[in-house]
Image 1 (tube, rainbow, N blue to C red):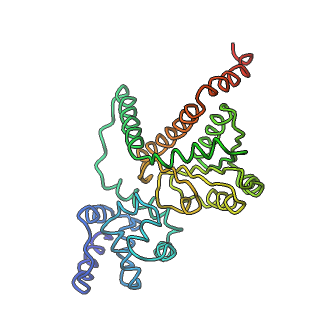
Image 2: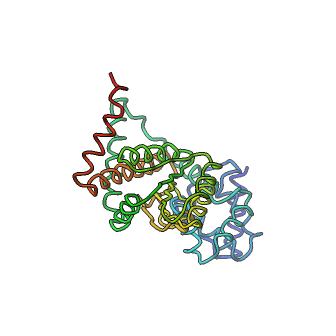
Image 3: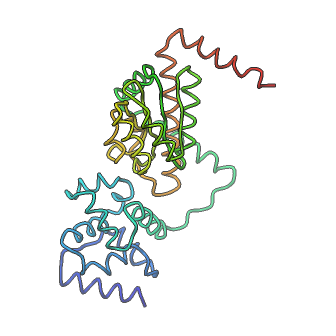
Length: 310
């Protein structure tokens, strides 16, 4: 059986090398799976053929899987004191497409080892989700950088044009921010098409602001669009859930909403809740910064759509 072979192989390697010890959690996950595709088993089976540096990364994955699941590739590389490309190459060596697949596979393997939770009663699920959202809002309220928020408000208020970028689930959030800013009388537009992101970024200048929304801060096309906008002289802002990620490296202002990954549906829900809160916070902060002028602006917005309502 695969499980028996894995256990015997692990014991032999431990006696020979004496330098690889799995955490109790990882040990439980690895030994509970009989599927050879389980990521822990896969890494163990390849361990002997890895280079010295790759073994260091493998040990990190096996002993601290939660640090992979909840951190960006930049943070992992820094902790291991290796280049990001080294971490990426390791994931390809073990047969994965990249760091994001490693995060997903680890989350799947970890969840597979957990006992199935009791199915909540229908009337308790809304309350549980509300409690999760409330907790997330309190987290971001205490976590968000006040100076970064003020700099964001000042930059948006002074901008000639504001371009907002987002893909996937962040696309609708980019559109929401556009609606909020447009309602305040600011010249804002949002793009969730990668070609339009590149085209719009190329036509910005130092009078403009580009905002990118990315939950993990690792979406290549969004990062590329923000980098292009920065190269034209535009001020760049990111709204993200990761303080150390590729998108922060091309951002003049970093509005970090939380510090969590997206290993499961709960984390994903918290991440979206945090960013939506940040968008509302930006709108309210801009209104307050406008003072009495905000009332006239909001009335213009309301009056413009009165005939559209019953």
